[in-house]
Length: 77
Image (tube, rainbow, N blue to C red; front, side):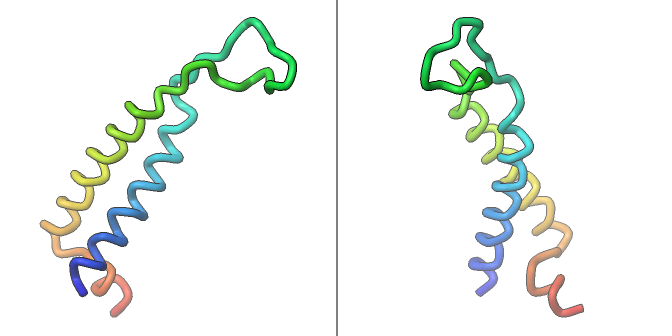
């Protein structure tokens, strides 16, 4: 049960960090195309953002595990 709790914490941390990093460093085009939004990115660097998010989520999760904080502890109080 504790592994499932850690997995849920990882997913929660991952999504929060992903939405934080998502708008950073997007390149938009100066040439607009019909059918595309003017603000649509030409290069979004999604793979780099996913890797950074995964690494930071893992570091945060390991830190929370080290200090003994998990979902069971949070919801018991």
